[in-house]
Length: 177
View 1 (cartoon, rainbow, N blue to C red):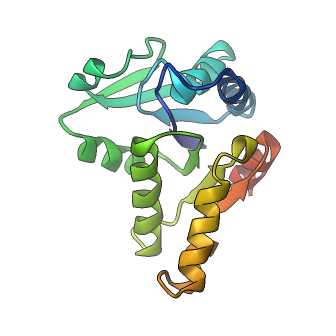
View 2: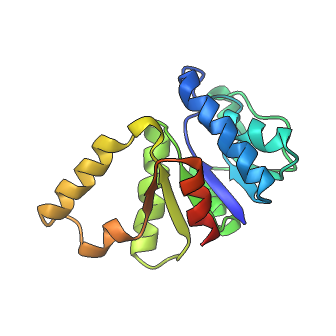
């Protein structure tokens, strides 16, 4: 399966998160899943990609050339697709992936998560979305989504179109199903 990763590209990402990211990449590779990601060398993106690469997995990086102004690029990919914009990048993530795993990240990760969630809600795709809640990173966001639901701001089924996993095994189990 081609798994798209959304997550931090920051050099400041805590080691306790990147260690789990590396293990996720290792397990993706050992379970014959390919990685599709934004091509960053640092943070969660870099950690997962290194785990995939070090264990013989396939990696597709998708990014605009100008992203190098913000992130150091990961060099050990099998395929690199250059885009003109972030919108084109996100469209290619959707086109080239079978599932989405969201790990801890910043505003770019939030943008990607909510866009892929909205597109699934609007029936533009039916791919799996897994929010990997490492060390309870997303607890407050999950709580906010439940509050939005309880107050009638989001429709009933939105909370049912993605899953929350608290472990690598949970991520892999949902991908496998």
